[in-house]
Length: 207
Image 1: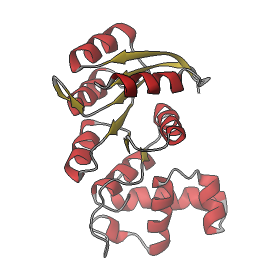
Image 2: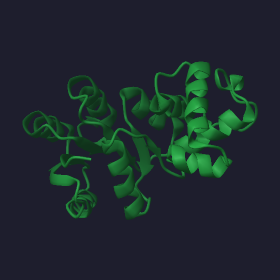
Image 3: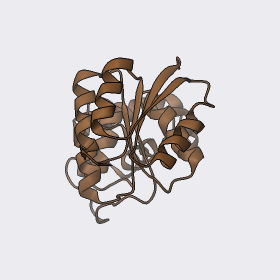
């Protein structure tokens, strides 16, 4: 992955600076910009064109989901990772609907946050532990069309597994994994695996 600038948006200076300090140690991070408000974040995004934004939802001058939505429309090359104190399903859904590629709680381990940032920057999806999930039971449509193995495969992808690690987990060939992923995408009507994971999260299938 090529190096890129990261924008950290959080109104708490300690959290913001701590995250910036962690990211500056990463070889894929060229520089880190900081913003404590939506207004500062918009200005920084317009001026510095970041390649990743890490956004808190609760900001003093508005909802961080608005920034995520704005970046998704105006700067598609800048994916967003939401880092929030809230595990409420409505907050998570709002962030995902706005275009966030991942959602973690602030009490996640620093290593997990940095790894999630790297994954989202590379175009992947990450959803941390501790967030609200729906009731367990029969999967809702369109996931009720999946057989148990396909559903397990989707959940492994949601946990961040690569095709190779999924193959090892399910004891099947990597080519078979790719074929089954294609079948899953067709059955649920998703354009790619990231969208399928987002759909599964909104349906309450993924933690």
